[in-house]
Image (tube, rainbow, N blue to C red; front, side, top):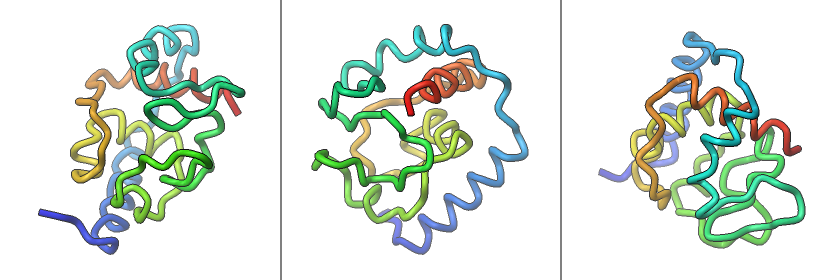
Length: 128
């Protein structure tokens, strides 16, 4: 079932509320660097590397989803989602991208471990 823009916005609010209640533990950027290694198949967080198979993750926090300049491979559902990336929303996305936005083109099953996600997010925070 395809989700419309209204249900996506509602879902994002629900996920944001859910993740806000389950606060992110303190993350370790060095452990996060290790967790991020498989992500390098598609993404780079370092400034100057640009987009690859997926968008660059430099400065992801505070950026509207689906808007990375120069990356044309976003799914329609992500481009139309209207939300801004926060650590809490990225945590929900990393837990299960398919549940977060079912029609996205992200080929990734998720990271079930909450601490590993917090570590990865701490790592990405280093690249503004």
